[in-house]
Length: 307
Ligand code: DON
Image 1 (cartoon, helix red, strand yellow):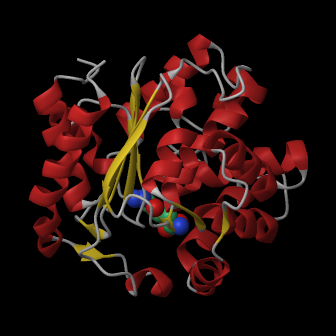
Image 2: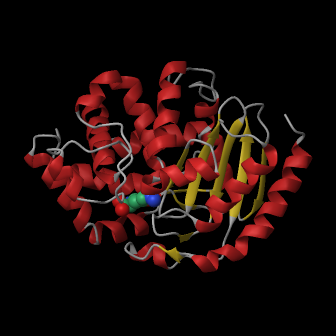
């Protein structure tokens, strides 16, 4: 592994280079609380499997995880449900926006994959069936893996999204009409919105995602996923984690990754570490403009991709 001071210098130069790219994107405004975030912020952090963490820019500032939370929820549910999960949700790239309704009707209420909103609602539904508290379960994983007990839901963001969540409500009711939700639709939506509204920094998130780089092994040495399951989650991150831009993301970055409309992207370097970026200005697919560029530069300069 490259020494940490060298990695620090690399992150510093990438942060400086990509920060101006925010001007090419737009902050998500369909969730009003996210529209208030300063688009020029940028952070990047790398946590290594050896235990080091380096970061640059706004890497210690907390931001809204949004869909990045879906990576952790899927890992938890796959560990419990195994292949049975795939009767409820597919695992193919959608090629459609993350909140699209059309595909769901063609495919009879079975979402294309667990990272589009409909698929994540199914995952939350399974978490609720298992524990009765999908948000609490997610927070427990994030707190334990990041080592930060104060990781929590930003209630302003959650209520802002809940008040404007007509599209997700439509997706959830539609799936319920096909019998593809086990729990009360409003409860599923409530937990989904709160999971999305968890706030963490790049550094915290990079530590939390390390189990995916350690082939399923958690911070305390226990196994969240088997090696084979960790492979599968990483594969779905690569093919579906950045929605209809997943092909372009794989081409440019070459890592499994999960984006969120808060501007965060979590990527996995299997066997090496977890690299997280945050830049709130998004491209048309809902991925951070400066974030994708930073990841592209990082893997191009280090050669650390999965390919
Ligand atoms: O459900 C939504 O629309 C948001 N809470 C999350 C969407 C999201 O982050 C998509 N990712 N790029």
